[in-house]
Length: 417
Ligand SMILES: NC(=O)c1ccc[n+]([C@@H]2O[C@H](COP(=O)([O-])OP(=O)(O)OC[C@H]3O[C@@H](n4cnc5c(N)ncnc54)[C@H](O)[C@@H]3O)[C@@H](O)[C@H]2O)c1
Image 1 (cartoon, helix red, strand yellow):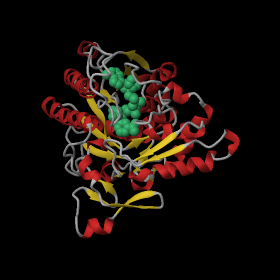
Image 2 (tube, protein in one colour; image 1 turned 90 degrees about the vertical axis):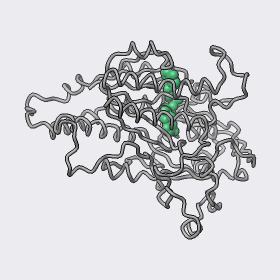
Image 3 (cartoon, protein in one colour; image 1 turned 45 degrees about the horizontal axis):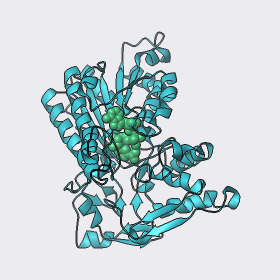
Image 4 (cartoon, helix red, strand yellow; image 1 turned 180 degrees about the vertical axis):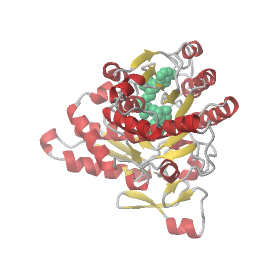
């Protein structure tokens, strides 16, 4: 199996690559292959043979500050790293054929592309918005042409930001215990909202613009991917993720918020909470990218199983798998920024690290902010018999330990103003 991971030196792409290269993946794969293959001679098969049959090509242009730090360690683990820009069609055409593209390349910030027009003209005189669309959508189009040519499958890592900001912003909420809580009684009795329940936001929630330029490039990528997959008959899975977080994420104010907040708290850099009266009560979910990798593995295995055992057709007893699913830690993983801040205070509040950082509470809202984004991932759980293994506190603990061990991480990842 040859996997090509775009954005392979980024946080999510590198975490997925590491998971596929890890011993755990190799043993899971070994057991699954033994289970599905009647001819397999238990004596001749070894985990080593699976290791050698897995080829990983990682593609990245290293534009994300910090991404270069992943390159050497991924090469040591056995991945081939190709440096190049997916906006360049000739470059994408020159990539070796593979079985699956796992697309993790993007400029993943909801604020991306909306910088003041005319200021950020460093590359080819492009405006920031043009550049964002080229990176996030233009690159996807090149990859879909690549999948068409090589009949490779595509796994698209999409985002909760495909859901309507206007609908999200209008949810009836109140602040309780440092978090915005949805007024469920009111919504359920007076004003039912399609695609919303106490479990979170479903795939059927409104996708009516505005979504942010970022959200729209992700949604447009999803639509094009579905058209290409249907027209040219290659497999496709779309995973809409909420916050993905873990050690080694690059932290900036507008992307990688948990890492950014923890590092700035620990090393006493000023912090700012925007909107919602500066309470930090806005709520998000979180998931470790290893859990996303486990799901992608199941999606790839299932596609292979159908192709080899049933001529590509699902058995009538198989319920069809949804192509697009929300993938998140769900309501159990939900937290507010204020809760994260209080957790940091409990862990690092003592004077041992110097005077506690200065926190500014600013009532003014940030563009595209929303009070409550918690994805309902029950479709993914049911369809794939999948559930996250890493809970919120284990993710936070992992990031905190990484922060303690890497005092220069924010300088490396562009998180110092
Ligand atoms: N991190 C999250 O919380 C989150 C949540 C939902 C969805 N996602 C999606 O996951 C994917 C990965 O996000 P991430 O957090 O790892 O971001 P990241 O910035 O850490 O990684 C993205 C990588 O893509 C590379 N890249 C960007 N444009 C490229 C291009 N044109 N050619 C080649 N390489 C390019 C960057 O250099 C970077 O290494 C994105 O598609 C994002 O939309 C992320």
